[in-house]
Length: 259
Image (cartoon, rainbow, N blue to C red; front, side, top):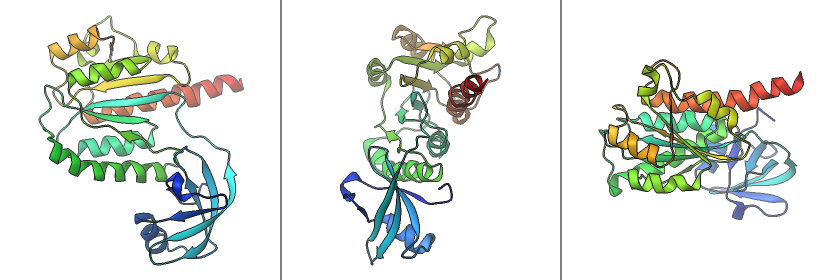
């Protein structure tokens, strides 16, 4: 199954025994993968369910695949992790989306931080969003995710603080915590997380958080944490968080269960 290409198809394109594939996925199936009638693929619906399918018809603008079996699988993180990323320079946010998706993020929120050099107006954001959605979809297919992460509209600090009320736990990576002897333990917070809880992780841009931002985040219930003793780049911090949580829940605890 691992060698089969995966596609995320709208649930409305599923019937009892077949899937109708349209759009860019048709080009990928016919031109990139060069599939033929009889070849097998995996199709995921909007609910995260995956089906083993066999291509039965190839037309100019559609591919029809018969559903052979529904798969019992789940490769999603046990914790729902949202990355609120201070908008970085250049194309760093695209890297965070791609690698963050591979590592199991549930949602991404671009955050217009006080020290963000890049400023996204509505017009620029609308143009970027289509590419962002393509990146997370392709990364989800490549990493055999069951669901494609969502990307929310860019928020300012006030909106982010209000959004945080929807989460069980909220943390922010504060570089000042890496410089002191007594610091908030990221490891302790991970250890106290429970499966299916919603975690909001706020990462600052290249210049980090302003003192005012840090104070407001703390007042709103965010826990300041250090991500190891070294100062990480903004595009590294979110990946450190996701990889650490993945190891803790999916590898370390699995090893403990087998002992």
